[in-house]
Every structure is written in C-alpha cells, then in structure tokens.
Length: 351
Image (cartoon, rainbow, N blue to C red; front, side, top):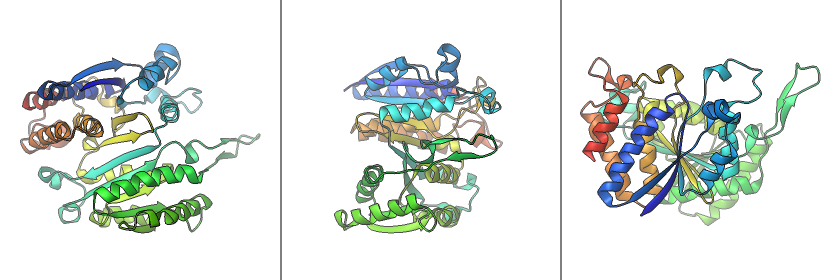
C-alpha cells in the first residue's frame, strides 16, 4: 500500500517524538512492503513565527490532499503567558479540526502490565482497564460565540449543539461499542444544561438502532469521580467537547504517564493521529521526551487503514520495550533512562 501522510511536527517536543514515530512507521512499511510518502508542514507557534498564522493555507492543502495526518504537539510559553496575544498556536488546532472536519476525537485509556505500579491509582483499581472516549471535537463552547461586554468586566462563551452534530459522534460510539463489550455511557449535565438535554434526548432516540448495546447516562461530575474509583466499569464513553477535554486528561494518568496514550481525530474524509500530551517546552531539545504515545498513535493510523497486523507489531514492540525497561526518564524511576532517539531506534530495530 502507498500512503501519503501529512507530517505536522509542531512545537516543543513535537519534532522529537514525531521523528521516532516516523522511524517506527518506516520500519513497519519496510517489513510489510508498504511505501510512505511523508509530507512535512508547519503548524502552531512554529508556523506563527514563520508566516504569522498557526494553520497556514499551505498546511491545510497538504493535509487535505493526504491520506492521513500524523501530528506532534503545539503550544509555546510566550503565548501562554501573554493574555493579550491576538494569534495563538491553539487557534491553529481548532482551525485545523474545523476545516478538515475532524469531528470525533478517539481517546483510549488502557494499562500496561509492566507499569501497573507506576499509576497514581492502586493496582487493584486499574488492572484490566480498557476504555475509550469519543469526544465531539468541532462544536460546543470552544466554537460558540464568545467575547466581552463593553465594560470589559464581563466575558461570555456560548455552548451550542445541533442534533446532527450529536448524532454523528454518537454513531461512532455505538459502532465502537458493538465491536467491544456492547456497553456505552453518555456523559452529560442534563440536570442543568439544555445542550446536555439535547444530547441525552438524541442518544436515547438512537438506542433502538443498536438494541444489543447497553446504554447508560451519567452526569459529568459523577464520571469524574468514578474514573478514579472504578475505571474498569467503563468501556465506551461519548460526550461533548468541553467535558471530553477534561475527562480524557483525567483518564490519561491511569496508565502512569501522559506520554503513553495515543489518540485519533476522525473526519468524514481524513483522520489525524496524535499523542495526547502537550508540547512540554521545558523538555524540548533535551532528548528526554517519551515518544511512546506518538508511536502508538502511528499504530492507530495503520489500523485505521485496515492494517491491523502492522498496528499489532508496533504495540508488541512498545510492550516489549516497557517490559525490558527501554524507557525515558519519566518511567525510569531510578533505573536507566534512555533518550528519546534511543527509544525510537530500539523500537525500529525490534520491528
């Protein structure tokens, strides 16, 4: 198979971890007889510095004409610490999601047998955890009307959803549930929010189309508690943009490190794959960033193309590296810490 992949390294540690995912992907391609044409493009703070825009038109054209996008991270302290900045790296991410139609963020949370003791939660609570969030990504409060009143002392952000936006996200969740344990939880705040009542009403109306799926409805605050109490109780969860943003970051620490979890953003014609961690600018250029999440995002990319064996080979290599202690400093805990490039080289060689 010939694949054209847009490569958006972004900011901070993004270029370093992306380099390792490319190494691993190229090793997989060689092993299975595929050809990957990587198409680099600018985004985030790097793009602002170069052309003044966080998601330039040229970058969009490269992404839109590719089979998929492999993405690193965006963000820089010079923008985080300046509340008056008119252009921000994160605006590029929102713009990219909207223009590419990436409406469904898929965020799995699972544990690694060799790392159970590294989680902040007790081993007996997390062992066997394997859940996945489907977060709506192109609507809600992040995209609603926002601003400040004339006096500058009052700000507002408008949360808005259409039934169509909810339906297409929920459909992804139901389909995933059918392939897993046929359990789906709709996360909302229907006791106080009208948008959440529309979410619940819409999902309830879809239940008849998936009679085998057991559907539950829970308030977001209850889910926030239960994720750290009984994460094994969940399988597929669907939710709106803001709630999903918060809950998926909470769930990510269950595995023991944010540097381990991959994600995908699915659209109608193209999908994007990225680690869940941020740009971690303090570590940029130090060769200490954990590349595993980006490598596992590449595994999700192969699987999205129907190349399950290729994805499996990557996952097996990652599990082997973790079991043998081929890890960066965030997981070393007194043992030998390998550099970002060393981990990538080991994974590629193992494949």
